[in-house]
Image (cartoon, rainbow, N blue to C red; front, side):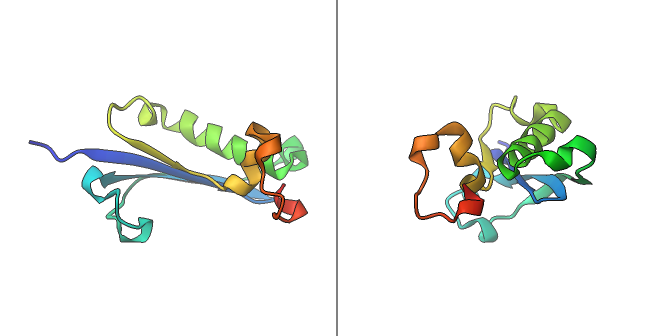
Length: 110
């Protein structure tokens, strides 16, 4: 029987660039710390922000990186196996739950 495989995507953005990495890892290793898992690289992209993209806020750019990565690897979320998504929650939480953010974060992270 084939070993179950989980897919994971990690996305991030800065003021000038955004990107994403897609990997797969045996599902049996998901309980291990991320750095101890045997990830196999499936996809990587990184691009500079250009034109009007440079005017976006950091949370908008983080969300753009997420959407762009998922659109570039369309079968990523269509699998029946597990899917893990890693994002910078400090930058995205306000977009999804404005009242739920941690008040101790610094203003640039809100």
